[in-house]
Image (cartoon, rainbow, N blue to C red; front, side, top):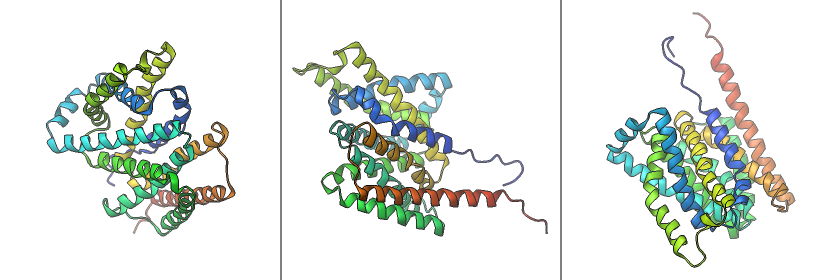
Length: 303
């Protein structure tokens, strides 16, 4: 890097922020557990767009949105990413409401491996020997977990592949994080309003007018959707996709702990062994990154 070249900004703080919020998301979903998953995802989309527009107005990024809308390919890619994130939300919310917290957690444990697969095959990213050891350890742990949860494996795989592919698309589309999220939310708005209207006209009525407390909780979903997705989109554009994947182990680990402490799910010895493998893998991966960063900072001796 030359003296005049600005260092590449790190996406790690944004990645950590996004995964912490997503890790504790099941606690928020307890507030809206009486809302059908399909209806809740509709309202979640409806209330995400105003949050995005407020931030866009504050940051003066409407010209960036207009510029992105002129790029047909970018709009098509954002349409695909919008569909993927909607599927991810629907399956995740349904899984938590059905008490399948471990299945949701497993999905986001599988996700980093899918990230690494996509990063190496499509983005041509490379891993060191130590990082491949970490990947192998994590794969062993996840394979044992998956073998013991075959009946709910479809939940885990849907969550893993939908979100990994979403992140890959967002990494490659030449649109900023906030303008891209705003366009995604706008694309999903019409079907989301249709879902909300359908529930409103149904005999059981809409959950939104059930009570003030529930309505405010549903509206909070917009903020809790927009902010971590915005942080994730920033991180995805700044970080290697493989590295971002390993940071993601934070979110399912929080969900796993919540499953034990809040949702009262039982922990089996095999599961404890598997999570030990996964965290040892994460430790090796992080250690290797730190060693590389330290080596890169050492001054090159003069010839």
